[in-house]
Length: 244
Image (tube, rainbow, N blue to C red; front, side, top):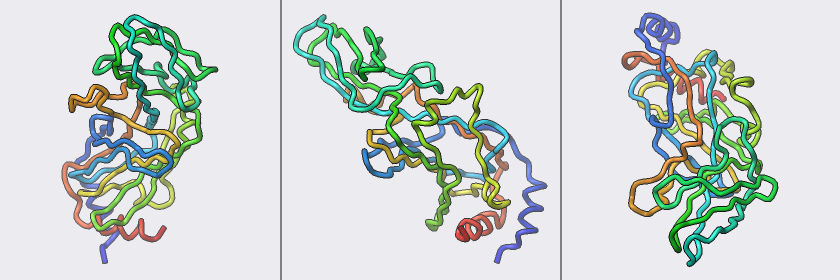
């Protein structure tokens, strides 16, 4: 059995730096509508401690594709399948790609859940990342190499879109135990989404193998990290997580 007091002593004497996980830290997969799906994950190569005192940022976007008609320079109205909301968390609630390029819609109608766009081409693919008001859940989960898991945060995505992050910052609450905040070496931190839409941070709109990013999505999780592994931390955190 790991000696918790010895592990605490090693943590106190460890050299640490402060940083944050950003979108660039994660590997992404698209969510499956109607199912709890892992959409982002990062495996850490040193001991991390998630921080409660600094704001965490989440803004998860729905993704949908359309094809323009066979007439160039023809304005079309496109109907989104889910409730489009004007998000207070991000500057751009609807981000539009035509093929691999960001373009500007002619107009956006939040009440009708539609946008208008005039394409200079024909039969082109449009990819849309947008803030959806449908009820959807996210979970931030840490997982040990042996499969032991613990959910460290859970939020309603639609409620997050209604917040102004500058006025109402989101902070993690990790007070269930001393060890809950720790993500040991070789553990994985993952984001799961259960939504009626396709939740995505990246999709290959133009089919060239290079996915186009949801630049209007947010994912930022602050941490303090040791310069390496902490002996015994994995065992202590694994036992702690298994108790809940």
